[in-house]
Image (cartoon, rainbow, N blue to C red):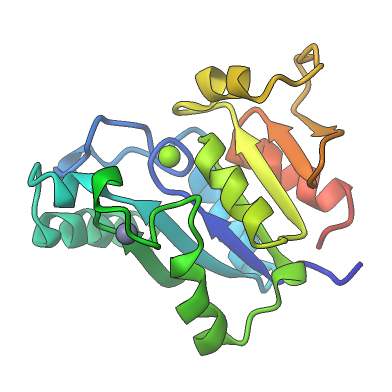
Length: 196
Ligand SMILES: [Mg+2]
Ligand SMILES: [Zn+2]
């Protein structure tokens, strides 16, 4: 199994606290341990990408400019250039675009630009659409975190868990899936299971 070189991160509910259609930069707030985890991933030489559905733009709840302001705030709180690229889908589900996760349109351009091999990629997110995105792309691993919408989303997976209060747990399913308490625990699992 090739080592993972690229980590695709959902933003809301995964890196920063879920605030319904976040558009105010002042409301950017890290999930506990997320900032340190991102810095450690970067230090380890991994490429980090943000991949985010932002239907609030398509719904006219906020502007593209608002979105960029939030991103800028996130970058400044991290204190250094962490993300290789931030890719977002501005559409609503009704637009039926090909870039809203779990559809894979956003990956195609990145794959070309950064010469990505799906076997060297991992996705981490708090929604079923995030992990299905990784499944659809044949990623090495998909991680569902239980922050944000995660604890509610996990019930949609019909997993024979029962979920144990561990930091993380690899799950037997038809694609490589890790359930983790939060981003920090997902990273611990990725390391412990020799993905990096
Ligand atoms: Mg999310
Ligand atoms: Zn889209």
